[in-house]
Amino acid sequence: MKVRTGGVTAAKGFAAAGVEAEIKYKNRKDMAMIYSQKPCVVAGTFTTNVVKAAPVLWDKKVVEESPFAQAVVVNAGIANACTGEEGFSYCQQTAKAVAKALNVPEDSVLVASTGVIGMQLPIDRIVAGVEKLAKAKAETLEAGTLAAEAIMTTDTISKQVAVEIEVGGEKVTVGGMCKGSGMIHPNMCTMLGFVTTDAVITKDALTKAVKEDVVDTFNMISVDGDTSTNDTLLVMANGMAENPEIQLGTPEYEEFKAALHYVNETLAKMMAGDGEGATALLEVKVINADTKENARILSKSVVCSSLVKAMIYGHDANAGRILCALGYSGVQFNPEKIDLYFESKAGKIKIYEDGVSTGYDEDEATKILSEPEVTVLVDMKMGEETATAWGCDLTYDYVKINADYRS
Image (cartoon, rainbow, N blue to C red; front, top):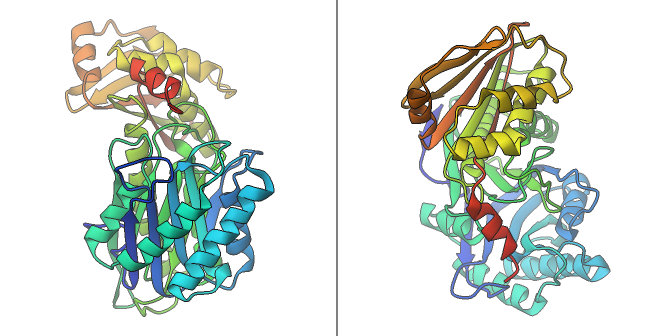
């Protein structure tokens, strides 16, 4: 596997664009488009929130019922959630506008929105934005970057990544972009994410790869404990790499899954580290658990703890908060057997061993916790299973950002 520059336009045949449409913001890009020269096999996963935004309902229908997908249009600023029949009709009107502008079937158009819940979209601006996007789209890496920037809301950085693998002697590329900074919590992907690939792959294989991989990538991040109404991950494969078709149960499938995992995990960590107001990426790795599921539960319990997140912000090596979060996770274990470590570029230190503090050096621990990326390592000493979760610290700025979000 080779990491390369770019995102959604890295794979053959994909174009993108990002433009200003003034959906809610002014003087900044707020609409994006992804377009494939050829029809795509598509797979997706969506929010588990009972309150689902109109674009989620539209996209689920396209993914499950349409023969293929060929374009995605995304707006930032207004989520088109809790908007009733009118909001759903705007998805259809957007798809019609895209179909006309790109000469593709209406049911091959996916839509996504992010921003304030409860507001209706200014559909005239959306349609005008679609026309601008269609004219601006390009297959360049720069165009992919513009698209990644256009889907941001409170994000401080755009998020994209791409990798190359070889399948049957042909180069296959997988690239993606996402947005997510707040209202990020495990259970589906808690974000908007778009992955493109030029791989030839069956729909069954793509669907299985996507649904299995989110469990250990996007489902393992948390910023604030809120699961959004709009969470969407869409993966499109246009087959332009002309590799032998990737099917379930083959070595080529495992290679593709590894590439998809790298893209998804990288994007997930970017989101976790860019949490609203965050100053540090928090990684919680649980090792030697009795089952994989328990390892996931334990690591997520720690990364979701507000007290642990505040502890990371204050660079305070308070093992009690981690033990507390492990203890209320619902997993049964013996606290007198586990070990805890803090680790970063500044070093590694054991702070808890077999039920008691190690008498660690507080200054050394503070130094380790002061880095922009910090790992909490928990050794359960119960088995051989491992899981990792990602989050961020909890800062004063998180409250400021969300107190003024609609202003």
